[in-house]
Image 1 (cartoon, rainbow, N blue to C red):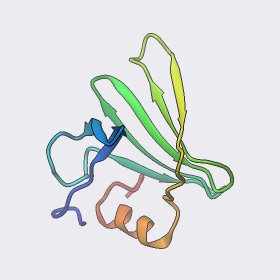
Image 2: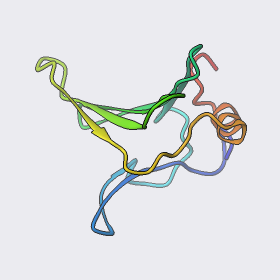
Image 3: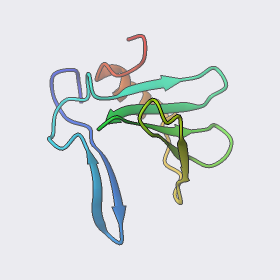
Image 4: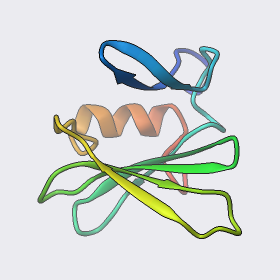
Length: 106
């Protein structure tokens, strides 16, 4: 995956079926996702779909979760714990985020 080739999609499943996918089409991630790596070792990937903000958080210590923010004026958020811990902090993943242009400040 680079800035001009490959694609990245977020997919949520329920009982083996896709219930949410962003973006709907396969396209390069530049402009659709933002990756952040923090000094405390945490990492996140963010995107916005239909006015809702999604932040996939992978703490260095503790379990991963997804934070969903409702459209701006409501100020409401939900957190969903991930049953399986993926990682956004390994060198390979971090390099993909950099190469694809989604690393914040890149």
